Amino acid sequence: RMRVYLPPGYETGKERYPVLYLIHGAGEDDEGWTAIGMANIILDNLIAQGKAKPMIVVMPSYQGLTPKAAGGRVQENYPVFATSFVRDILPFVEKTYRVIAKPEARAFGGLSPPDVVPDAIIPMLDKFNYWLCTSNGLREGRMAYYDKQFPGVLDNPANTKRVKLLMGDGSNAMTFTESTYMAGEFKRRGYDVTFYQTTGWHSWPWFRRYLNELAPKLFR
Image (cartoon, rainbow, N blue to C red; front, side, top):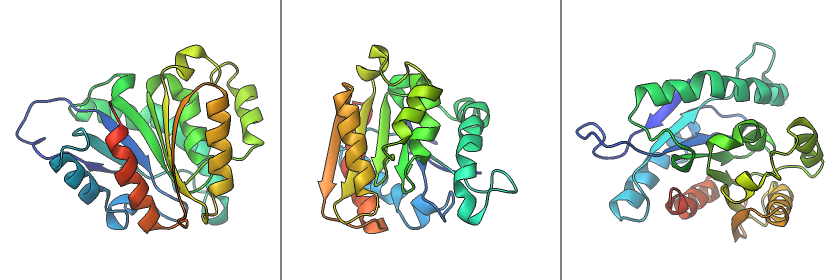
């Protein structure tokens, strides 16, 4: 299940667009980024002001992908979602909508639980040029897991020179430790990292601000 934002003019035009795949937080579903996050309004305004490139935003749900993965066992969804994304979501979007099906026109990101976004994007890092983190990150021990599970991927020069990591988080957020670790670790590995740091909390007013600040940097 997913929500899809189409930029103004999509229905009457023939242009192809880049795509941002935007993941919700724990305890939410595919409605979060529009019902609470106002992603559609934020993008409408950025595009109207000429600050962001017109783009499609796909907001899938990663919850409830298996009957046993509910409530406090949300992390069981992560590997299932990563498989489903490559097998189901990406092909569906690129078949159904007028998208530019190239890494430089794909972005993947979202918010909240540490590890969910990297767990999904790292196995398919070759498909994306942009990685967006709106108040999330990864735990320090998780990096060793990625290096073992996906050897050579994160240190591959083809990735370090190509992938741009756009991050936003606040010093009072529960994810700030994971965010700062992630920003530092990827900078050390040679990635182009933008870290928009605030004094904010882990809450929707701040998630909206990070999307508003970072979306203009996509697909440039």
